[in-house]
Length: 459
Image (cartoon, rainbow, N blue to C red):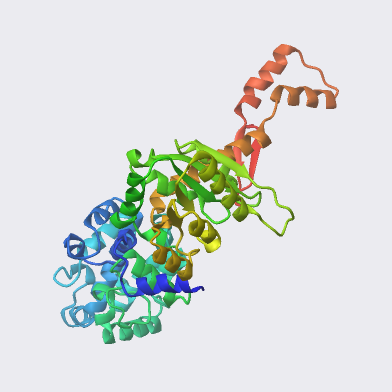
């Protein structure tokens, strides 16, 4: 990991990411059974609108009900056990101790509790943990940010279907309850991490740390803040004839497009032209960009002198020089995250520059140099989130449509005639039309477990 990445991670660990979202922590809080009052409080991270949306999802609601009951029994284990042994009450009848309405809900969804489970705390917990294990993956489509297995491991109780597993988890929970988020059970090594559900960025950092991994896609959990947009708008306001020059080797097409689409139209229109300087080895998305943005685009694909050497950097400098001296362009937005263009900045003292950089690619020395020279920069990955996923989805589907058309275009009439010739058989036009209408027009698509597609004539 380079120093720029380390710098960003340290900021998140300290909770300094002011533009963090709260979508993931709201989902996690809902699933693990954090009480509704925490969603209703404006001072706490979980958002009530996400709670209300998840209430419409049976898969999420079932997991929440199972976790709510598990939390309640873990917190009130002695009371529940005494009520069973001393008062002869079943768990279903403990309205004063447990959220028994959740039991009714689960039973309405086909999850039933036997008398043996209703009259024994451990048996009831084992049933809850077994159902959680069977049903947790039904919620996988709700997460688009972190590795799903990390969330699953955090929600499930290790060996929760055995008495030994219950006892180990209970001891850890009781001795460290103050560290658990909202005193709600999760599977982790409890420690003083503050509120682990404080923000999406903080939670992602911690979740990956617990799994000896690193979360670096902070663009997914942050919104582009007002300060970031103001940097761009200020540059666009004070300049005319602005050219956005893109080092396609050193920039991400989806993040750049999300940034441009995230700007107000009146400001976006101040960009006269986008110049894409590309290498044959980069993403083919660059030559599709003009389909998704109204700004005129000049696309230059630079052939390599040899396979091991790209000359995109040199071409960027040459293109900017021509624009400046031949077309009198004196305002450049540079989509690049490294210091290769420092000579350009140093020599073009009569030009105004703004750099579009990315967190992971931009080193501290380059940022320090920009700051020293008073050249503004902003992180374009702040604009890219799951809400921008349509960009990848649309381009991906467009490519798939074209490939399907190429591979699956079959002249059925020709196919029929060919097979008749192979069989040395003859049919008149009426008989061929009958076969075509009855069978070939009703060909169906099959996709097997290995996701292989085949065509089949219905019998």
